[in-house]
Image (cartoon, rainbow, N blue to C red; front, side):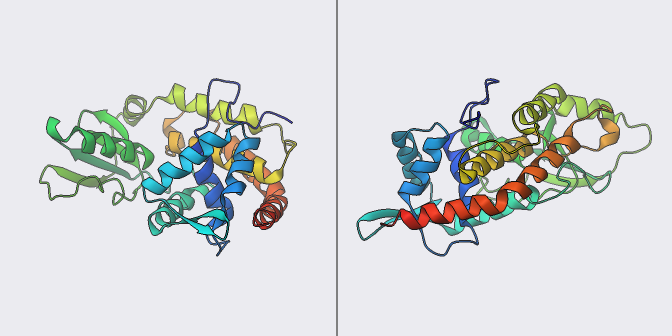
Length: 276
């Protein structure tokens, strides 16, 4: 079988939760009314190099985080998505399903500023992580910038109280603003290019890798989510001329079209047999 496991061969390893979320978003949300037997997760992640103990531990942690419901169905253990998990996967899915996820609609930017005391370090770390997922880069301490108009509701959820020192603004660059320099300051473009190169090294051959198509599609979607998390979709005018985002997007959708039907058929067959 070709390299579709947890290691990409370039030092990047997928986390089991990353793979499970890709699996749940691809095969479960809005497609299956019945909860999914644990054996399905164990077998598919096993094909991706995750041992059974690690899969079970990750499922337990996701139950503890309120992302999965666990119960017994006869003699088997099954898992279902919680409302919180459904919302999280749907929100991520807006960009996952976009045919041009790296192309902003215009040259509008969102500026976000905040200040949190040292006593709230955990909330500050959570906020920073969520800002990165929402597409923000840090211009300087406490001042973040993102292309377009990202949804800040999820990013602000760690802040449970009303705080005066938090604010967001929509803006457009004034003539003479050195936006290329700002982009280079807020985002690690070398690192972003490396993420695209890693994705294309693995998936850019044009042919579908051998193996269970449900496993291959889970692997593809997990890597796509990783790439979307890294690259917020910056305006092309501020990027090098050979920026690889279009090639990455074309590669993903070409493989998705080839894999979608056989992967869902394989998943349904596995889920049905796991109940016996």
